[in-house]
Image 1 (cartoon, rainbow, N blue to C red):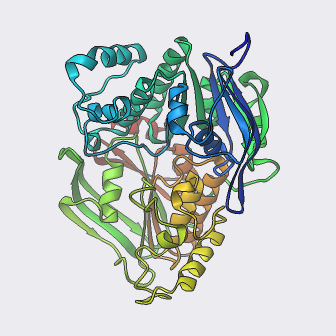
Image 2 (tube, one colour):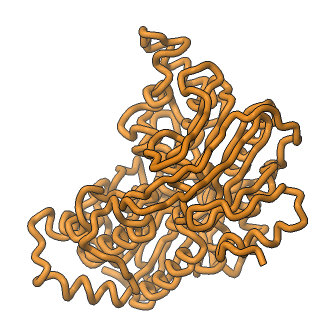
Image 3 (tube, helix red, strand yellow):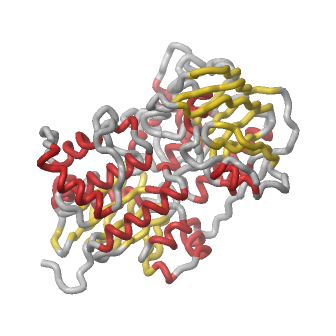
Length: 494
């Protein structure tokens, strides 16, 4: 029975191991009613694992969970939903070939035919209450990332009357404007008495939206308290401890021969509408070029076309062949389902696309596969084991596995689409430094980024995209960089 002052949710001394890895070590977290509690820390610090324990997706090795004063049966997603716990994962759990309404049906009435005239008033009322605006009759694969996220939140709120909404890195796929709109919706949600747990690595956003903050490091809670009790600098220090990480710098400007060339490229989006219009660019050996732009202006479609997973509507792309030694590495923006097969092990994912090259050729001996995977893991300090399924990894470790595979043969061209999206400060710095080092060693590197500071810190040249076109080009030491923000939003420099 809940007593006066009892928090909505209380995690008491939860511990969880995956093999030899201790993901959560005596974790205790309290979530009050009607508040936003931010859980921050490096990728792999145990944030998502703790919330997965609360959502019933994992069984804790020890510890207890209380919801409104009642002991929650652990390891049962159904019991967690019935207790009012809803979770929106960083990688969406939607069926792409179904409409938004059908996806809601899977959660609300377990897949029975959802009659719109019976359920529409409740759904429409909740959408108005929270401030959602998207079409439920559109197929998920046709929705923007922001609309898919709204659908996930709506589905969670409709499931068994959610009292606590858990959001795992919700702004990692959103533009600055979309993030601000999301925060407005979260305030509406907490105004109804519901609570929100926000897993995030963006500390400025945490200071803006959260009421309380919990800092995790190496599986433990190292700080918990009101958001006003810590500064931005103190939060960063709590997260990474006493370690220092490089901020990145552009590689030396010694460009060689052209490695990647695009001539008048045109690409359509998933709806068949123009996304990239007449783009021509060149990347030379030994330089790092960044494509900057507000999300949704064709950067993703352009990078997918270069990566070979989206068809051209016109123009041409010249790049090294994928299978050739020192060929082509592609790092897509979507980890699971595009770069990695979630149900396969790290070792199996590490050899995807490499199984016909050395040291494998046609004979996939387990010891060779495991040895290759271990080398990839150790090269980028991924906290994982070769036979562990990749679906168990944090965002930073997923990206490290991809980098270990794609950069194993030191390719002459690296195309990276939002390589630091969703990563903590330390992981992002490591990956930026890896890309800079490869460019300094002679590779041609093309990066798409939404972070202007990131582009400034690592790129020799910055290309600005607006409405599917390259509307500006700047060197990283140009005094005109103040124009980039205007170009990104309006397409006009002054």
